[in-house]
Length: 212
Length: 242
Image 1 (cartoon, chains in turn cyan, red):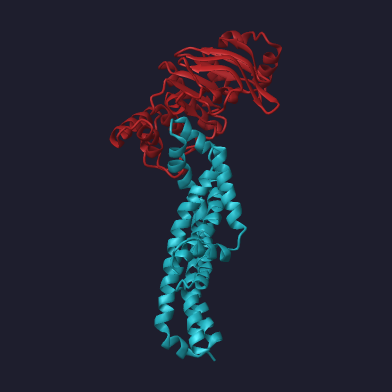
Image 2 (cartoon, rainbow over the protein chains, first blue to last red):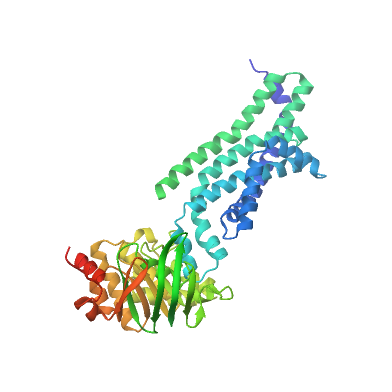
């Protein structure tokens, strides 16, 4: 039977960790969405050096464990654990989001770009006003999945003392010696976040499938 | 106005356009016909630089199309284009489809752009669909919106790349009617099409292409009554007698 006193006596710590996990995930989502969009456009822009740069980033970052990237972010700057962890997560997730957005852009018919360019819009205008709004629709479900991964990966903040849910779990288990039960509660808190997200993504997928 | 001078184009080793010499004057309606893969669409797409030429020169109003110093966006504002598959922006209303380029490329105010858009929507006969989305329109209606989108930039030249090939047979007439009106009003038009009736009635000149070359140029009456080239004769007999 689970020792619920672990939960009740340490509720403040759990909630503090939950808050940090949510904040770090949201910031990393926003950051990696912006960076990922930029990278995706770089990879398909009609300018070779940008393509190479974008490809190099994606291939490099995707093939390094996220734990190592978080460590590097921590060691590279004079940041606190939460900031370093969030930066590491952003750098890592951006590579995956870039690929999702690139796939979205590629799935927009080439004629859309040609039609927009033929009216005298610049490449940037056509991309921003015609291609990306269509691509985003296609990309929302995979983006949702990336966000769920992001929430789970944010547990790596614990290794750089980021103050997140996993880190609070570490502290509580070290303090109480009740390791198993503590991490069960940690897992439950993660589920509180990820299950609604997962259902939300499923709902969006269904709705978008119907609108096309 | 549009001058091809010894234009060649290659895709790798494959030559799509061979020694093209063609001059299109202001107000002229030129219909390009020929079997598929003959380079008709490529020829058309070179004019607004959707395709680049490999050598020779191509000028529009005396401006070299492929030149690095040419502001291609400025040039394109003067050349409207209509595609086989319309390519309306699905996330924008009919009105927004038409006002986008005038607002962003010409810097028109939203009010001015909307007024112009309504004018052209009325001209193509679907003003009542201004607030609809493209997916709510029939193919013929979508293509007419695409024509209005091109016209809203007030271009001197309109390019049509098989504008009726993707339409239900019943919708072809309404699109051709709009194109005929444009031609009558003196628009410079280059049209790639298989609509022989339209070509015969509206074209000032027929350009017949095969295997990347222009084989014959003639006024419609001459071309249809008595084509000089054997290949053109064969092509005509196949598409007129099926």
